[in-house]
Length: 593
Image (tube, rainbow, N blue to C red):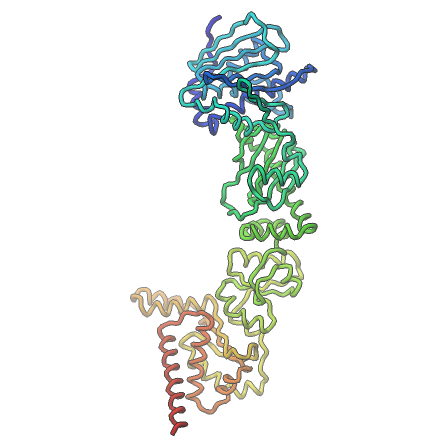
């Protein structure tokens, strides 16, 4: 027996495996299970009849033996597969679908992360010799023939390195074996002296019916999921189940899906196999067609991968469409839970928009309503671009039976505006607050003539505040006037107020901006002809009283619309308020005398 060298810098490879390639040292259990199952698969192809199984046996000396009764290795295969990194018995079939789990010849070397030496006893089903292979982390290995024949198959012996003793304990090993191999088609056993357990489960969740899959998810993940969506991709030879999460998650939250390759767990952290919009599900998936990366904790993102990803997205969309038609309660529950994130995705994805828009709720002038109920009521919709604009008109719009939707919340404006793309018979116009009074009833020509002098007085008084006056009939009658503005007017008001407190340079800049405007934008104060007090003021012959009424109603309308009052408007409000008090007190004194 002579010592031979690995065809690789083994120390560097061990560091690569432990620090970069694998996420944790426990993956050596996965690699050993994978090698055993693949060996059994290869022996099955020879047509042998045998009781297939993989067993991990614990010994008191922090040693484990991993045995399979698969095809075993010949001496030439040992040299080729155990000492040449990148070589594998499945290499010729890398680009074809097969029954093997592993594809890279680095699996056994992962054991060096937790063991100072690897001993392999193997007897091939193709040749009769029993061979012992010893690999050491200094980069050498040896092979010798044993006199006593072992059963056909392979046994790997590992002894703990310092610091990795817990990986050789019953509880940790059973946890790792279950984690990686509970759904493998070959019996997987753990034994220690008289104790022996089989860790396999009878049926994986992707082969269960919906109710069984939901019960499995509730038990395994301690979640009462909303629903379970079956997943299937023919081209990726993939089956799975997507669980609709029972709690809201953000679009940026890390997605954690459990993915198996040929029933061996690759990772429970894979987040790239589903479309980004499928944030509301967590999946358990098994694939026989996608190719794992070298670490076998992710997939190669090639053309096949992205095709399968699209297929899975279509599976979820088709199911949700059917769910919305056959079980609206479950569908609506999902929408309620994931409302904010669904709005964001519907704004970006046309198919999702068509699927969810009817179930999304919006604030309207008639209260919170689902879009399907809004469209059942009217096909002519007005949407505000800001919350403030909506508040300006909401109460009055309802009284006029005009549907206005608040577009001030995130994504609501764009979602409503896209309605016309959904149906050409839907008109979704943007609210123009200043011209909203066009929805009100005009006064007659005779009535307008009676109040013309009042409107002219109002225009003169309110001109310094960039406001013009109109009169209309509208409900509710107890609302004396409605003040409406827009962004241009607000900017001008802000600039004027800032100029008074700013330096000369800024004041000059404001003057230039105003000078460039062809016509100064004006807010609008719409007097309500249906209001008895307004009617009295308009038809009064006392101009001082009309002036006081205009100033009072103007500042009140600003307050009712939640508009900030500038210094001059605050002064105007205080003066008019004091005047009203003085008149009231004077009249009260006269009546007592």
